[in-house]
Length: 166
Image 1 (cartoon, helix red, strand yellow):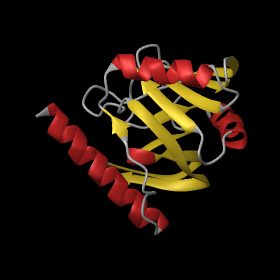
Image 2 (cartoon, rainbow, N blue to C red):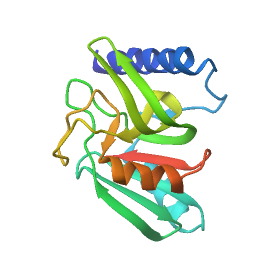
Image 3 (cartoon, rainbow, N blue to C red):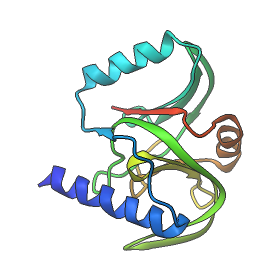
């Protein structure tokens, strides 16, 4: 049942993205709900490259921006609460918007700054309404303080891998 709800959430988020942006998601497969050992293998591959990539750890509530094996920025974040968890898996950054309105069945937040959308309906963005990070409180997206979100927005480009893990 939980997996079904997760898939429904993903479809709803993708539909919201299509409606908000007027574009369909890229034809890149979503690698969610994969075993942790496969995620760890991907992390190892990325660390052995010179590629920029983003790691989100939902257990430690930390986001790290990497260039190969070098961490270039680390910050405390807030991910999805237990009823609306942040999906783990391997994704790709699909789109960037400096400002967006985020809506769901029980929320409508205008002027959300520095939004980075990754496949599967995931997003990383500034959260001006949250004063304390380091605990899961979102509806599935990754919240950051606005100044940190600005840095990540300027550093990341479309196509950057996003690894979300426990």
